[in-house]
Each structure stands twice: as structure tokens, then as C-alpha cells.
Image 1 (tube, rainbow, N blue to C red):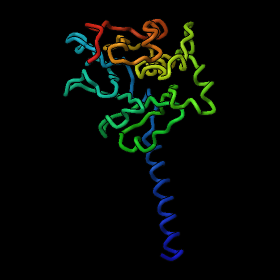
Image 2 (image 1 turned 90 degrees about the horizontal axis):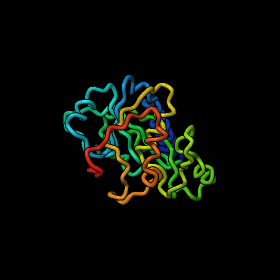
Image 3 (image 1 turned 120 degrees about the vertical axis):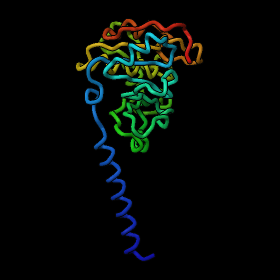
Length: 219
């Protein structure tokens, strides 16, 4: 290949990368553009039929990862995905990624309708990052009297609590109805900060109204 052909290939690659970035940027949005009115947050714990009816009457329904308790005809207005589940959504879903602060997600955002700016958490995969010490010290609920911090567990806060903390700090959010969350990490062998201190979100998320799960299990 001649130099001219190499230049064409080079500039074509650069153009594709720029267009991909611009395309991704146009689909970024903010939470209050997707979720307005009353908000229901549904964890992957058990919910009963009466709770399901309440959930379906909300203006904005937020679910997590593989949406275990969602029925086929029920809505998801925003899907919250951890870094290891970023491929679980469908192309038409709005996605909020919860990822370690040292990681990126550009490739995944191209498959979704809208990708919100990520919520960053600490995980020990970032322990060698220059900002790791600062992130470990960061409070999960900045305005709460409880001192729970990202680095209190090697896997940081759960995806659910990371979202609730984001909503708690959003001045556009007035109240949050929470279903299917019991923070019982022992059953799934997970020890996020808020699974160790199971009352963390109950105390610190003052906008949250927690609806009791029918049992302490996860689906």
C-alpha cells in the first residue's frame, strides 16, 4: 500500500472515532429528562401483587441489571447497570451505568437509546489509581450523619444504594418509593458497604419510602 492509501485509512479511522463519540454524546441526557413526577425504584428482591400495582402507577420506574421481578408487560423507564452487567439491556432502554471510578464505558453506550452520565463507585479494581485514596474516603451519602464510605468494602456500595444516593442528592427529586430492596447480602454472598450496614439507606435516604419485602430473600 502506498502512503496515500495509509493516509486515507488513518483519517477514516479518526473520522469514525469522532462520529462515534459525537453520536454517543447526543444520546447523553440527565435524570430529570427521563424521570419526572413520582419515582419507583425496584430492587431484585420479592414484591407482591399489591406492590406491583403501586409500582405500575408511578410516572418513572427504575429497575436494575437483569430485572428479575419484572413481568413482560411492565415498564422500565430507566435501567441501572453495574459495570459487569452493561450488556444486559435492550437497545431501546434508557441506561444509568454504575461503574468503578477508574473505568470507562464508551463502547457499551453505543447500544442504548440514552446513556446517562455514570454514577461512580469505589471497587478494589481501582486500588492502584492515583485517586483511589480519595475515593475510598468519599461518603456514600454526603449529607448524612453516618460515616459510611466507599472504601469500607472492597466492592463499595451496592448498585441500589449508589442509585439512591444519586437520587437523594438530586434537587429535582422530591420522594422515592422503594420496592424489592432488603439489603440482605448474605443470601447472595455479597458484602457491599450497605449490606454490612443494612440500615444505611433506611437512615440516610430521607427522600425514600421503603416498602417492606414479603421476605428477606432475593429472586
